[in-house]
Length: 336
Image (cartoon, rainbow, N blue to C red; front, side):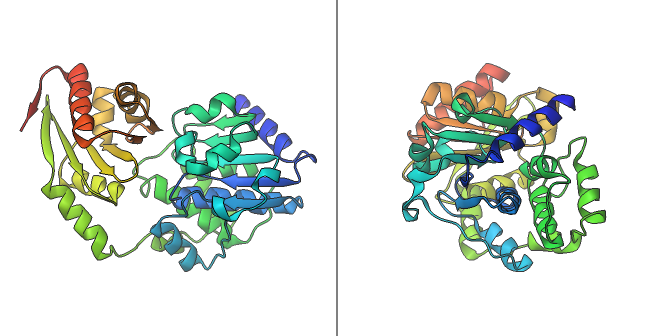
């Protein structure tokens, strides 16, 4: 706890330094509600100190984030990299909810070599190596980290705290995953800051459009089934909605899932059940994805039960490496 407090003080001292009057705020591609809530809270805080802030989203935000902002009626202005003509004049960047450079897309070349801060809750990525400052804490959501960072220092409307609550609900999968302070923070958001739990919860409910439904069905149709001891591993490929497909396959009964999409790059979304992690001790972000990266190049990272790989390789390359990695852990792996 003392170390956390000290790290928070160092981060705040840096971002409030008077030499940084202009600050760029960014996060991972296709920003989810946790990332959006974190970055929005940080912007409000910095504007209290008359900082000129620029939110830069490398590839915009996902559809659920748009839904959340619409329901909460929160205006959210941001730039794409190509639209920000004065990007080179920004002396400090703050990267939230990712510590992997590939997740920043073409923004990374503008940040590389400059002073930047990383605030994240995933496994340590390559951005940390050259960061001016970083704050990593393995909490369930980045929204929790942002609340701890700004606790007692922020003046904001209750709807902003409702937005932060959506970030926590989203990354915890509505408290499927918890840490030892999550309920304390949620209690403060509701009781001290009047966050509206029902509004936050309902903002995360979005009817699947037909494209997402088709992706889920195609993902199920194309599934290759592997048996690793008593665990069921499903491997499939789609062109979009990888995370949604992964959740659907877990709901079908899988213990571990790999969903591949190949467009301009190869993206592998991996998910596992808590039971799989608890019984095997195998972390996707710490163990499996780094092994895949070792064999295929590229980069990746994430949580114990949710992680992503990004690189340049074929579908069969990914399948063969996944098969090899599983054999390292389980010995014989049977294709069902």
